[in-house]
Image (cartoon, rainbow, N blue to C red; front, side, top):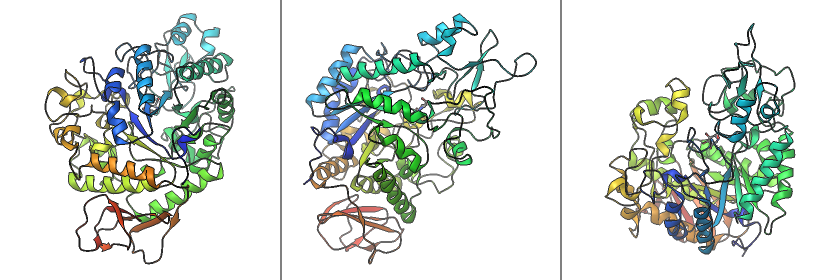
Length: 549
Ligand code: NOJ
């Protein structure tokens, strides 16, 4: 049996990593915002779940213009979320419980409150302080037009004008100026940050927008010519490596440099790239001489369709294997609709329009969504590679689509001129108890309103309850740990009815998912686990996964 235990340096290859979005996880000090002590207090939940590691989304000083991804100091803790001592206590307790700790690194941009950006504003055009960012004069007779047609992922121009007339680049919110990675001081500062957290004992890093750091800043800057295409959509329209700021070949030099820092530790620190780029290009970030892993969002983006998922799995395994990495799988995170809702939306649904309808057009059958989510999860957990689980999915939480627009905090809402509702619906604070203020999230209210039906999903409502989603995750993770052996997958095509996915990991572990809308014969073998109880009629119902020996 292959040893994938936590003491191996490549523990991450088949790890299950739990994403904590700190301000929505647990609030120990009762100010309505989750904090590090809240996480430490609840680490037993993670240990009890059976995950291998936790990934903490940013907890650094931030005005929360983009939920903490606007970092004012990469080497400190936001006072509202705690202190460095609180972080050390969290890491120590996690390690005591056998959990690895991954922190988020946000190297593409800083907060506009970062000391460097404040210096750049004060120092004026042409100053060395401005060189750390991307400042340019505007176009037009008096520089009143942005330097290029580049668009922010959050809407509108990616350039913001400052009072002295220059413009700075922000691929995300205005409060997130992009750093200039051609600048040696920027590179050295992030080496220092990698060492800072590695010295504090973190086991790995999640690298935010890993594909955007290297930019072609040679003059004159190039227009993209298709301003209607924003974010990663533009990549599909250009030959690989030629986009002025996404997925340029030079970005890999940065990660080879980081690898030297990460490998200077024992055991070597790992990293996972958030890079929304197509498969084979994405795998380059995961090369052993770079980060080790890259999030694969293809499973998350696939429709609930057997053939589509089979293709995604086959391709993802092949591209990861080609570079010696293990595959990664994600169903939910803090940027996307929770999968218990998303998987029920017909292919092609405009997700924003759905959110604007408060989840009514089309309406989603909650029970059916949960059933499908559980089937998708068991399928994911049976795949070779590592799975990233987002807080609350172990409770089966649906997307809170009905958040009133007055409470929205995501910069997407304002920056799109109140057109895109954004990502707050998956960031609503977790319910721990069935009653009480904020359902046990904290002593006060929660920073986003929790709907009354959260009580049904609370940890307290599910703990020890046979058949609950929480207990399903626990059982699945325990069993998975025992069953893991090798990184192989073989599709079982013989006798597999249409709409059914069946594969074997090895002789003692097969996974069969019925994605069709009719029951199919249950394949022979010992039933180890099912995503919902079987009817006892020898058939596998729609939207059901079974693990067989
Ligand atoms: C990706 C993060 O996951 C997202 O939440 C954030 O808004 C952007 N990067 C910008 O940092």
